[in-house]
Amino acid sequence: MTISQLKYLLAVAKHRNFSKAAKELKVTQPTLSMQIRNLEDELGVRIFDRSHSPMRITPIGQKIIEQARIILHENDKIIEMVKHEKGMVAGEFRLGIIPTVIGTLLPIFLKDFMRLYPDVRLHIEELTTQQIIDALRNNELDAGILATPLEEEDIIEMPLYNEPFVGFIPEGHRLYGKEKLHDHDLAVDDILLLEEGHCFRDNILNICKTELPDDQPYTLETGNFTTLIKLAKEGMGMTLLPYLHTLDLCEDDKKLLKNFEKPEPAREISLVIHADNHKKGIVGALRKTIRAIIKGLVTFHNVRIISPLPPKHLQNKLD
Image (cartoon, rainbow, N blue to C red; front, side, top):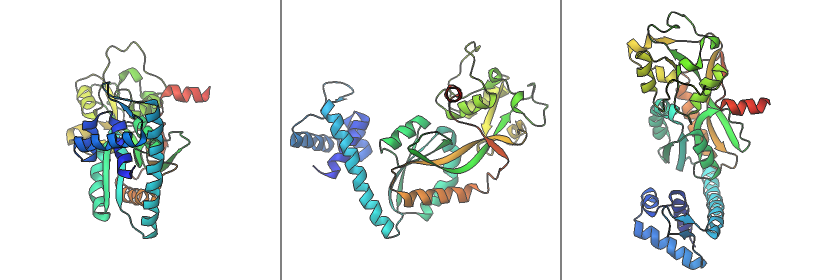
């Protein structure tokens, strides 16, 4: 049994597919299949049931996979301990970023980070908040960037910046003439929202202090701010945007933006890790780089942080 075989094992368990796992590992499918078969033969058990599509993990296979995660995690700890002792910031680092942040934040810091830390190999994925939390717990990610607070005991949150919400109010809308917006100006059935699963949607519902009614005239499923802007300009309502997204709008669209009265509602964007994370050198370098660059773009202090958790969750907390 080798470390490589255990890495292969986790990749296959993740994808339940040899072809996809081989692509992720950058090995040929026959090589991967042979290594997994050799491991099963050595242990004398079948880890995967290949008679199903997608293939299933056997009961003993699930136990082996869980133990493999522990072994690889401890192996990584030794490697990172030596790097830290030598003052090195190097190695592979798996980072998940939520969709409403990746498009604006990644272009801001990635080039500088790779220039400052050329020995770090970043693997970046666009994932939802829940996918990031699950991947951190399964040691499939080293860190995530998302909206906080999360109220997860085993997740450590390191705030990067606060990003205010900005109203996008088209001409002819009832709020178009207002100089500043206030929470009580908003009506949830008049706001174009992202699809379920996006914490930005829950941010907005929490500003409105309500849930979305069941009798909506139509439902919209999109994860794209551009779509919401176009619909707003067609007279379908208004929307709210994260501040950094507004910087790339054309000049005509910027004229339709409305700020909130202070303290402005804002979301807190944080770098998050699992409590057992051992890649502290890269985590620290990543946070330092992002905070240094973002400081000149988002300098708002008089804000109030809006929870990214679903309204039902917050209500349960109150009850």
